[in-house]
Image (cartoon, rainbow, N blue to C red):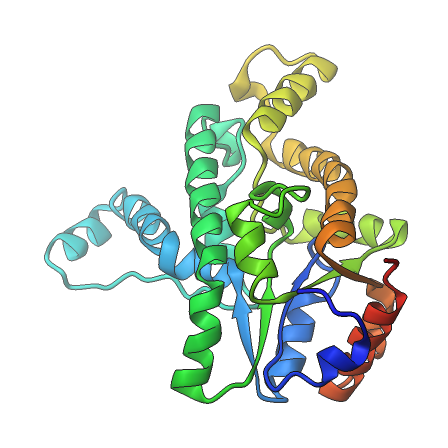
Length: 288
């Protein structure tokens, strides 16, 4: 959904925008802000953690609870109820389920189990993104929202081909929404790494990339066995490597199918009028 001029965008009776970029550049903040201006905020990570991976997450809670005899008996008799309290701003249940591979004594998962959960996440993310057209109409028909914001996770770029307009996810997004890349700086990337150390977010690695980086981490650190890997050390190292790998693909998606703004410009957005001005600026700046 590209425009010949900014006025074409502002003239739309109903607007639908998909924002993408590295984690922490302000996508969810923008969603929370626009929700107050009667935009429907569709969080892909929330959809993944509730609709498409909700049972996996809760079953994992139950599996841990069953290790405690007192809780196990209560669960068997249906005397207690365990659920996930995932929210747009708290994705810890999803992060906890996905986990990190490595030493089980440090909370790590066996590498094969980590790969299995990664594949579950890939499938869930694809389905969640393909849900976007349905939710655009649902937001209007059920709640009366004319405007729609799709708040994607950082791993959006891992489940589509940024050069292929026939890619199913690309088609679902470009035919129904305007794509807007929130482009971070090197300083943003450094802050993201520090934030990730303090509060890890759900991470998805492409399968071949994961295997290559897992082998590289062990080789670089002289580690022979998977169980000797510090899961926290790998999580941070892997996050930095994945972040660097994603940046040119984010750019390709914007160049081919959408628009871009500097993430720093988003800090000046205080309401839907500011956001409209930012969109107009991005549309006007796009090179033919």
